[in-house]
Image: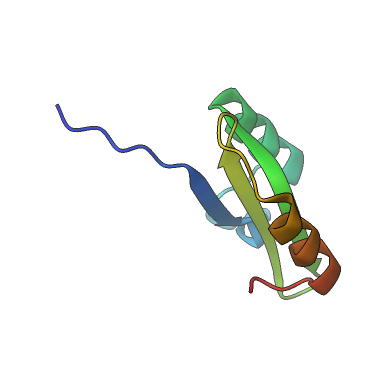
Length: 77
């Protein structure tokens, strides 16, 4: 059996509005991902445009410099 090891996942959760693809709340999405072994390391909310979330597997180390830059610049460079 083949397995896939997904370490980082970006989720656009603005689709989690009633009547959209996923009707759960932002917190339900985070709770679900946590139950699957991921942690939320970054979230960006641009009202009426998008809400992006970056989840990383619990056992993956993150470059703290990159994460700090991501939060300060609010960009994905």
